[in-house]
Amino acid sequence: MQEAAAYMLLVLGGKESPSADDVKGVIAAAGAEPNEEKIAALVGDLEGKSVNDLLADGMAKLKDVPIGGGGGG
Image (cartoon, rainbow, N blue to C red; front, side):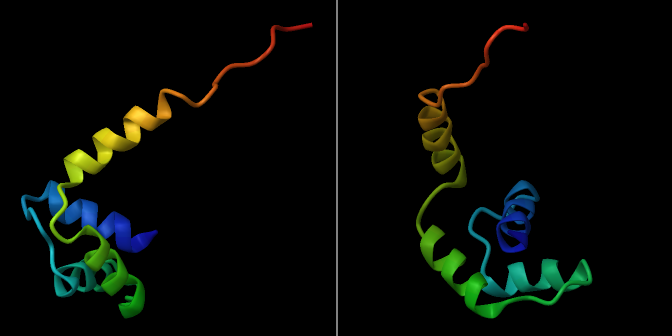
């Protein structure tokens, strides 16, 4: 999860397509130990994809999730 959070922080900071080294740097700066395998997999999966498009696709899927509950007793 820290890998995705670091990636998103870099995107929010203006880096459109962060590299594995960028993600490692953010995680190390936060005082955590970077997991190179997870970082490589994340960066590879997101290569050539826009984070904004991925978020929009995910939000479209969430509209079909039933949310709510029964009334009080």
